[in-house]
Length: 266
Length: 308
Image (cartoon, rainbow over all chains, first blue to last red; front, side, top):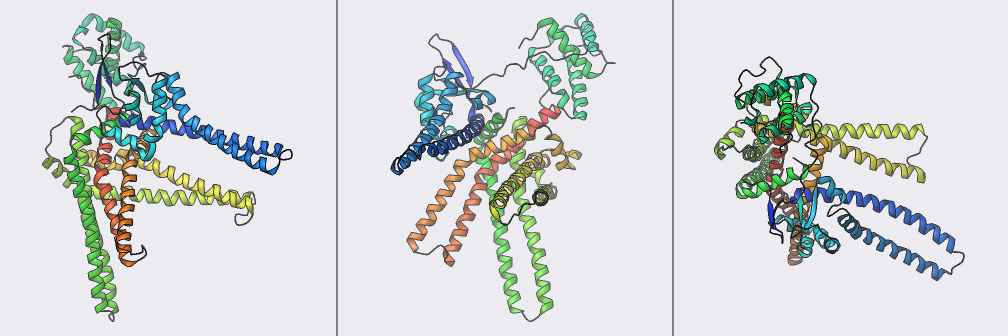
């Protein structure tokens, strides 16, 4: 069973691009974060608006007649409502244009808006999406629309011709710290075993284990490192490989040796 | 897996075997309906007997005690059957995540054998929530009262007192909500553990859930809140439909809503909506719990890491 929906796009240059769609989960999470930020902005602006308008009415009241004071208050309320609407629409347009299809929420969740042809979303797309947002947000209509179509588009996406995709996480491949004892063992490994037997996927498993190691439950940490070290020996056809050393050291050594030999091949 | 992807996977699994999960959810909902009807029936029966024998005090006391015992037995039996149906969904979806091929019958047999443990785990979780609710409520009230007294605030008069009372109520509600959400996140996979793990590892599912969810509380809270946002449109739609059905009924029969028949119609309609909510959303929650549990097992025990 395919756990994620994907979309394949053909660019005018005949390049095939494959993207994983953001899905309702990521989109709702990003929206939640954006709405929290938006609400905070709104509270801040409302406070400032309140203080400024009260002060303004106080200043102008002695100069203006009652009729003008009443209309001034109406104008202030109208300008406030206009500002709120501008922020509601502008927040998404400003960020999606400035951050190439991302808002703070989308950046946190690692998703991005692109055009149907795979190109980055620009001002017209961002504007259309933002203007149709009130319709999508009306009794959460957008959520239902996303749930019931394969491309996971809301009404704004259909009209603007956009898709929301997941971005590949970068920065995971940074080198992990390896103790000197493991580095010494890695030197021996490079001479003794053929690391070509280890596929990049196998290396990725070892790296993932080492990344998670500190946050794992102590008992599981030991069991898993023993299990992986044993599987590694079988894979490398070296049953006697560093049997006296702790399993975690063996894994760190293999990680280090592989990095030395091939770099990060993923 | 990220917060959003956990929800995506749960929805994808639900979609893939929609009718299967919906079938189990329907059984779970029907067992809850059965609980309600059996309780009502028993109350009527015992009430009828009590009215006939109203002059015998001893018999009346016996009937009250017998009624409580019978209601407890009926309740625990029917609710545990409902829990089993939910646990079957958890187990089946977890097997899907493991790409294992357990039959539906075997999955159901496995969870049925754990009926008592599942019931006691669920009761424990609700009891914990209740205690947290009461405990946090008392602590916040006492602290608030002491601080107010320290600064000589009169809570019952003056604008300052009233403002402080409003702030206090907001803080009180926020503290209770935050504490309950925290506990909910820490005990999120409690019954899933019982539904999927075999052997001795499940003697204390609440402890296990507490350990596994450590360092992941905020992620689970984010999952819960985001799923709430996704579920909201359907809940709203159900509420709107219910409202209009009642208005139609009111219009057609001209019964005011305070009328006896109107009250019962409203009550049964509300009950039907709640059952419908269980019917539609139980599978999503159960699959979500399994997905979160799988993710926690991967993070804390590395179950997804295999070289061969």
